[in-house]
Amino acid sequence: MKNKVFSYLSNGFLIIGTAIGIYVLADIFLLGRNLPAGACPITDNRPWLILAVIFLILSLALSFFEKKSPTGQ
Image: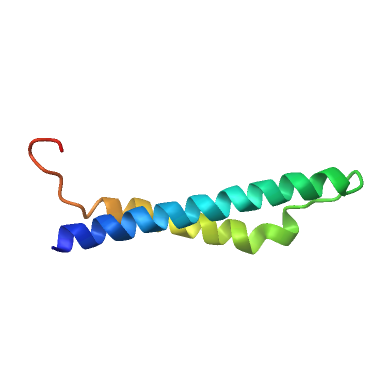
C-alpha cells in the first residue's frame, strides 16, 4: 500500500511540475516576442519556474522510495 502512495505522489508531482514548466516556457516565449531588446521576461515568471523545479525534484526524490518489483514490471 505504501508503495502505491509513493508512486501516485511521484507521478502527480511529475505531471504538475511538467505542466507548470510548459506553461511558463510558453509564457516566456510569448512575452519575449513583444518585449524590447534587453528586457528579460524570465524575471516575472521566476516564482513559477522555482515552483516547477520544486515539484520535479520532489517527484525525483519520491521515486527513490518506490519498491521495484523483481520481475521489472
